Length: 264
Length: 350
Image (cartoon, rainbow over all chains, first blue to last red; front, side, top):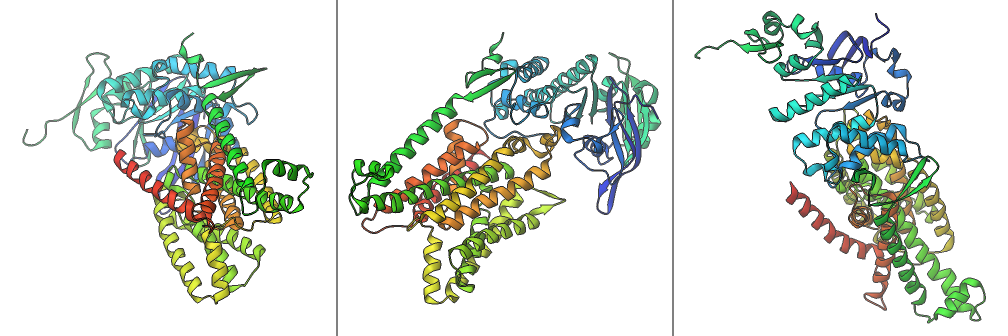
């Protein structure tokens, strides 16, 4: 048990009445790395992320942020250390980009101090980092999927936290926009943040992850650097997919090549 | 520096390390609404069967009127009616704006999702079954509103969360059932009770006296302070529960407080003047369009509601003079048309 984990879960049980999704899971998220959680549909990867993000309450066990149990801290204190971007968030019609990003400042504001120079600077920095300055006065709902995702990321960045959790930030995006969002996640990690993402696309997950967490049926099947943990056996066991693993010609990271099926 | 630091929508006052941002358009709209309120209030104070000039009206307020009857009409009959219209309208506007933000849907207004009908049921039971006076009727309306809200939320919640569309659909269903109950109560009532009930049900500011208006003013002040205290976290709910939670909002607590305050606002307004239809639905949406904001603001909704009810009451009094309509009839007719427009435009967008 290391005290240095940015985020960790201990003996975690999560579920709905009558159905446990996660049963007694332990995990440690190393600081200042990009961690990617993968696994088949319904394996509990989003449930794990949402529990660490305190959007779900564990039935047993606890989540610790920088070593302190999340349950012992106020939601605002947690929000000043950890930002979360849930799956497909939605803004009301007519909301401007700059107003949405400004909402990320909520945990730093007070009733009698609703807006300050710090807030202004943080919003501006977040919008520059995600390259959405030119969109400041656009309606969020009129943007393309990739732009919109960058705007939501800007909102999370405006929270000025060192931990960032992203639940499937690339879903519904085309390949170019997926790369754009993942590059941004990589840049944020390089600036010293701890980034955790749930991803579906294995090829990109293996390419971008410093640390990979592979889940199935609410349990962790393997974790570590992708090059060390990804094998054809693991992928077949987790996804029930016969495959070969080859090296990505660009980066050398593992790539899953499904075996040609019957009739092909 | 880029265009980021110059947000033209605000006047920014630099006070020590904090920046006070005043929305230009909001201030303009607020000023115009207050101006409109002053004009219509002046019109209301000047008109009536007993003719009183501006000089006499002003003299009545300063206590120097030489005509005691004029002074009486101005300060004891017309003024309380104007103030009642304003506080009832403000309460309905705020209540509507709270519910529309909480439910993420303009149709989540208390008059659509059955809460107003429930308040009416409570009042009707007080009149018909308990044969109660004004205080009992008011209490019944408040209990009816709260009870309906609890029922609708209990039936609409699933896994301890309430999806907006479920809230609206369940609310409409409960509202329809309660409307039937209200009809039944009216039919079963004695003639005098039925008359009292029918008068109350139409929603009227007629014969409004100071004691009741003062009570309502007190309630509004308390509830308005409570509303402003949760305004910031409430606004965060508009971008979704999960995002709000990630930003440190205690979503369940804020939602519960907001619903309690919203029901209390609606119920006290209803207890004072009867069910005045559609103001809670329309005021936040009109104010949102006027101020150009994505989420209806509380102050703008309150001012818009106050202006709407005051103006509707004037229309109710003048449109078939010398007879008088109930203000609820006017807001019902205008608001009903507005509801159709709103529904059509929502469908078009989908």
